[in-house]
Image 1: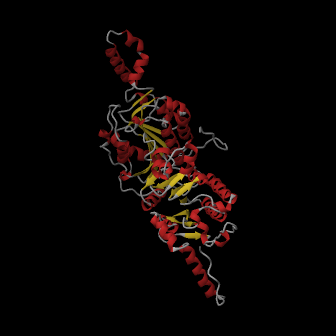
Image 2 (image 1 turned 30 degrees about the vertical axis):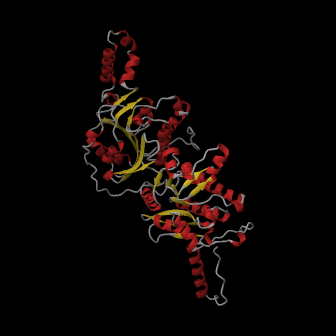
Image 3 (image 1 turned 90 degrees about the vertical axis):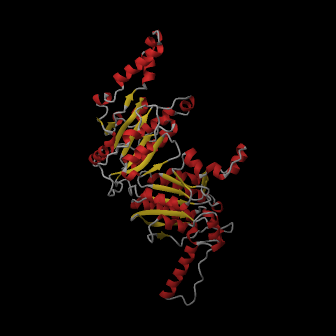
Length: 527
């Protein structure tokens, strides 16, 4: 328990009062006790202030409402009124740019949210929105403070309302560094990015005890809502790391690629990687045989500055890659099919993942580069019954609604509706390029031949020979690399080795793009 020191009878002048203030602040900064700090460290967790120090530039933190204390009574609360009320709030800088932050202090009431605690968070969120600067929450709390009842629940409502108001206005990043259960989990879900740390952070609506009581299933906290579960299975977490230090360092890296708000462009840095650097390795990376897989990550590495990029949702819906990178110093969002996973098809999860990423890029003025090698949508009863039409429409809606510069490159296959959905020229891509290995068609040649020439194949003396001949004929007539270019469906067929140079020039031209949407309150995207 942290209490204010007793005012000395001699502490009546300015010097005495100032000394008293420093003593109170020191007490607030220290926390409840050394034992509480040791217990936090024993769990492999840092304290709230240690985390803030890792996130922000050294010496830049300005704290707000350090001396705030709750006013609740009953259940022993009147005897425990620690400073900060279990949350540290304020602002500082990351790479010299302003960032607002709040961090739960698990040492005080287990980081549980009460009325005063919530009001501190509300205030810092309002400040971030007004200042037009990113907001980072360092979450390590036990949910609502039960002793304060409905007042604590109302505090969550205020946070959710502000999360929604800030959505698409300022970047919001949630860093999960401890437990997050019940309604508290909805705030991170409303933000742009969620980071988690393995073994120490968990998120779930109902915990393992409730799950067992209701369903009879036995499961651990990490098995139910740990970092690996949410990064690889549920898709709730965008990033997962082994320790807090590397996690917070990656938050800093992400912030370096995002604008301060929706009225600014992402920061441009000077690149030492030549804009006209050839990528001769690309000539061998992508096999001409459409049935042979390859790693799309290697293609991205060859194109972007210094081969460096930050992949979002790396372990969820791996058949599509979403990443932030730079081209000649300018930030771009990359959406790319991954032939190494499910042959790069679009399914329910891939469509959701890419749609949210496209919307984020559009909200924060990040140009979108789409790399296509897609054989279609994943067929199957599970996909149809799971709503692949509805979920695929999310990606279509996101692309059609995006007004940022949009460039697509067809590397190899681009079949059917999936080709249309993956930012084709017909849905508004500003520029569309294709490699000489491209095959743009309604479907693969084998399937098309079986449909178009089924009678000839069935009547032939040698059906297999006839099928092979018809496949070859279909490819020659409708799937040759220049068919789409001849009809204006792609702007140019380019040398793969020149892809980087072409993209850099195109982005430079599109940098001043301006597009107006019809006046409306908001759209009604498929859910």
